[in-house]
Image (cartoon, rainbow, N blue to C red; front, side):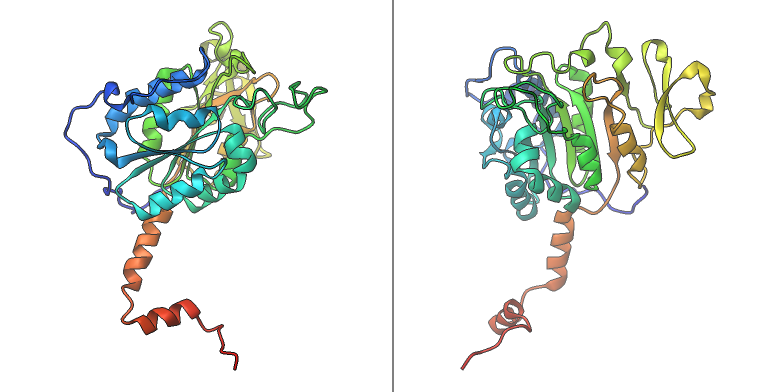
Length: 350
């Protein structure tokens, strides 16, 4: 998608040389040993210096859950807020403080259960937020109940006979909400995770990054097919802009788009190279990106795409609010302000 929208340059930059150590707080990190959150925290701390921003111009807002301890462990501003309401609080910050880089840390329960509406409206409005959704497919903080992303039949403390709920696909949900940037990555793949974070940070508007994250206490091995070096290449589809979509050992599997508009996986040897679908995250219509997000089998995780699904330019909510206020100007008098607030639909009862 082409656009004439200039990049935002409102957040003050710094010439100070920074390292991961500068973004580590003095708080003891308190997650279960082996939790995937440690890997994400290390990746974020290592990535933040590349932004070239002052620490006081970065803020992390979280809701409730294991992931929501994140702000304590970063030497930036942080808000440990209300269950599911982090996007709403972060929206207020982003709109009122254009000098801040605002990040939301949330989990599959916090974001997709009690916080579902807040998430989709932040995405559709294109608020300038970077939303990191840690997905471990379980409620970890409250000790192992099924979550909105748990697979059908999941045996947990709250579903002893197996969950009957069909799970959300966070990437599909975000694309359906018309999010302008949607990506998926994995906690243990430091290089890929950092690359996706960099692309999200460079995006103006709402960026949703789903991070597959292991809960080794209550849902250990949930993403093992995507992590086991012996089999992961047969499951993972690594999306790269402008490249034909191939995967599997030696790229023997590929993705094509049929005459019915649907995408499907084929053996590359059975089709022409030109038949392979070329990934275009900048396509204005999110239909193909949505189809790619639906390839995954929730049970086996076969055909799981990772990378940036969508990255298109649209004016951010923040920018439009500031432009609207600038165009409106200051009221000439208190009477003008009163008239504006009351509008035409008020009357006096005598």
